[in-house]
Image (cartoon, rainbow, N blue to C red; front, side, top):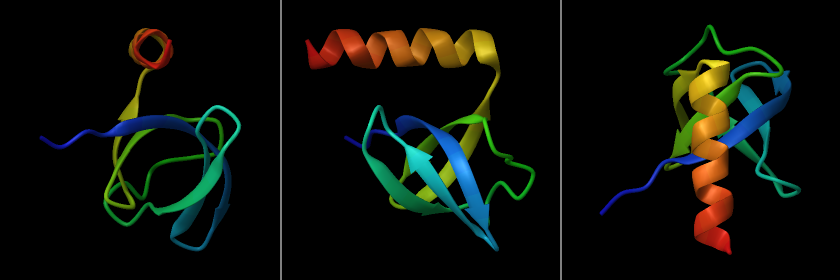
Length: 70
């Protein structure tokens, strides 16, 4: 099973974004979603941003991941 993890873009340098995963920051490529921008909630899989979420869906996904972690 593959899981895409939600996070927020905090910085972009060239085609790499710095993603905040609730306090942990990692880089991910935005080559598949070049329209992604700082502040966007995104889904990341295998080091690539694969989806930019609208705010309503982003809130739901972030809440679900918080519940899973508890």
